[in-house]
Image (cartoon, rainbow, N blue to C red):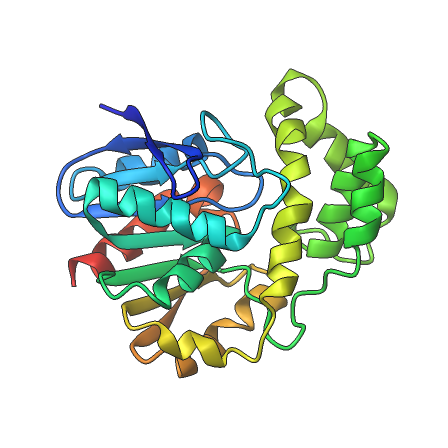
Amino acid sequence: MTEYRSIDSLDGTAIGYTHRGAGPGLVIVPGNNRMAHNYDRLAGELADRFAVSVIDRRGRGASGPQGPDYRLEREIEDLRAVQRAEDAHLVFGHSYGGLVALQSARADRSLDRLVVYEPAVSLNGSFDLSFLPEFERLLAAGRRTRAMALFLHRTHLTPLPGSTPRVVFLALAALLVGGRSGAEMRDLMPTTPPELTEVARYDSDGATYAEVMARTLLLGGTKAPAYLLGVLEPLSRVIPRARVELLDGADHNAPDESAPRAVAEHLAAFFAG
């Protein structure tokens, strides 16, 4: 049975999260444009072995807004508040949630094991965010379909090659954000620029990730964009107790959409030690 719980973060912001299962505490940190319910299947695959909490990050669900002074540090405080509330020493972060998890782990000596799936880590400018100003202008003008088309085109998070005509990305974006089914996506889009700004702000040579002391599994899918897969091996060489595993045929949305069972199998094996 799934419960919806809430805890106040360090700055007083309410952070909602789903909770199910029994066993060692595991917190899941969702990616950009994702909410806790998007990970229901993944949590369901793990709930027979772990007490699984999935955060609705700021700007989502019953959680408070990002706010005008949003920083990734607030997300770290939110994650730790849920960890303390649930006595959780296992963490899984997906995409932007992976960046949050890695940055939190740098100073969290209570963390036992950490898994990140294609974290939104930029090493020496590897994450190209040159499209961000245009994306923000389109959002400000209320042109969310065009903004989503730009995002899909420049992040390479679809199977379409970069040479695909813009009109194809526009059609795909219209499907994602149009109508009632796209209402949630439209609501989440304004949370993207502040998060991408933090990805850029945390760009580095990767040396600080040597502070991550938890045993760490760096996961990726063989169908993911090169800039996401390309940071895994460098991170594994910096993080003292880290290794890389790739899921054959998996894409960036394997944890929440295309292959939650396969991801859960890797998580369960690693967290079980």
